[in-house]
Length: 482
Image: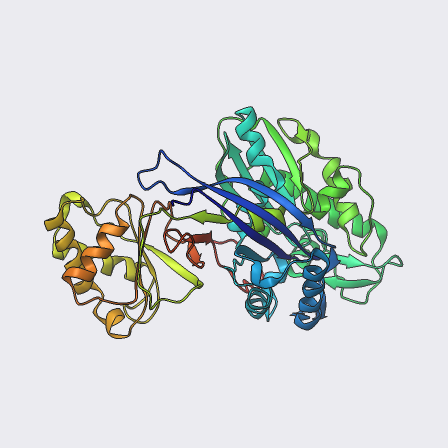
């Protein structure tokens, strides 16, 4: 009997510059009978547990306290009554300034291993912007209202922006503006200064160090400067020297009109009238942003989710599902993590052995990678027609292009935008010497520069959960990413 629905238990884990927390969601997948392969689509997302929010534990300013963090999340699983072995999907998101900590990569691996067998996403600036737009509800609202919303998630270390139009995120950006970039106790004694705050102080001619007493008027000046930078970026493009220094990505690409703005993240709780003080400048920054929102061209609306936008987006929205006509060799073990996507510009109308080999070689060169040294996902849009002689030619070309990968027994991962993965996989096995370590997936829309994690196959190996992400670790000192 054919399976038409799947339920997945998903977790989103957010380790941020200021706070850490998790959310459990239940995802309902249903077959899309209009799809050529009757692929599964995510039809419903229900949040079933919202965890406690804690200050992110640190050993020192450069190191996350992994032991205490793991203990906290284990206790959250216990409170929710969820066994980590029951988790089938999800993402660990290390965001903002925390992603620059010395052991950021280790914390992702520890959490994904300790908290369930699922794919682990580590948020680069654009990926976090995408999932916060989804998690806050801004993207869904733009679909419902058929309008364009610019959402901005303000955390402890960064502000992640996304433009959602008619239910799709069309542009993302990020700037180093956050509530914990500079932090002082009630008595004015500074206990934290991050690199972006030092840059702002340099522009203002202020020279404070950790342990100094900061004058209240100087704290206000710094918060105001950060707020002005944020509004400048939101109205774009960023042109001032200070804003350019704090940009972590390219500017937003603005459409003709922004209909609404919304804020999420921890600072947004304060922007919309919430109370709270965490020995940092979050409350002051919120006040300065509120004072400048009149410069925005459209109204500011309150989103469905604020401080939990990242973790909801991570757990419920970071997942894509492959088509149902994939091909998998049993020798491959899952999950497969942190695989770079290499676009291969092979075209069906130019199909030849030399053309396919040349296109694959060019994709490796663009990433400064050598074939046979690293596992990659080769992504094809329309390389071959479903005609056996052409499929055979394409299969033999793939074998010829990847001799070292095959010899080194690396997983050969082929991903197609169109419904052709099963045919390609079967012909490769039948007509070439590539008999093992082959995974062929389709009906996924990817972009070169994406990284993917592929989870355990579902429905007797028919479909695969895939997390699409941008992977950025330890970008010390900020700076614009070109």
